[in-house]
Each structure stands twice: as C-alpha cells, then as structure tokens.
Image (cartoon, rainbow, N blue to C red; front, side, top):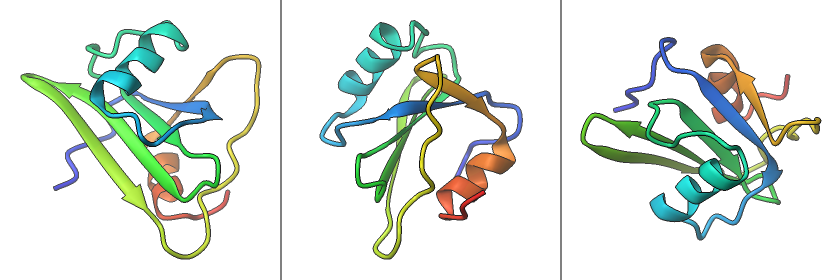
Length: 103
C-alpha cells in the first residue's frame, strides 16, 4: 500500500541516479549531495537517466522504505535543472510524476 500522504515533504533529486543503489547508496546521496538527513521522514525521489525507473526513499518509525517503479512504455517527465541538487515538490505533483503525466 502507498503510505505517503500530503503530510510528507518530497524532494526530487535533479540529477540522473544510478538505480543499482539501494537503501545505503541512496541515503548516502541524500547526506552527501543534498546535505539532508535521510532519517528525517522526508521523501527523496530519484529517477534514472532514461527516465523509466523511479525510486522513493523514506525513513519511517523503524526503518527505511523504498518504493520502486519502472514504466514499460514512455518515460517520466524531464527533471528541471536548477541551482540546487533537489527541488521540493508537493504531493499532487508527485502523483502526476509517478503516473508519467508531463506537466
């Protein structure tokens, strides 16, 4: 079940991410490149270079949770570039992003 709500904060990583990374690798990206705390309860969103795979990393009460989605047709929307390595997005934009809707 998808347990994320509008109460979470969502951060979209702006760079292509190596999807071979798991809990430790992605939490390292959060600490080292985003200068954020992966244990904060915030949700960190990562997309691969071809924009066909997405992972969401979140720490819940007792451990990490990793959502992983791969789409078979099309791609996720292009990630906007910016001065910071991550962009804060809202829950509704995340839902569009997960479904492959290009805003």
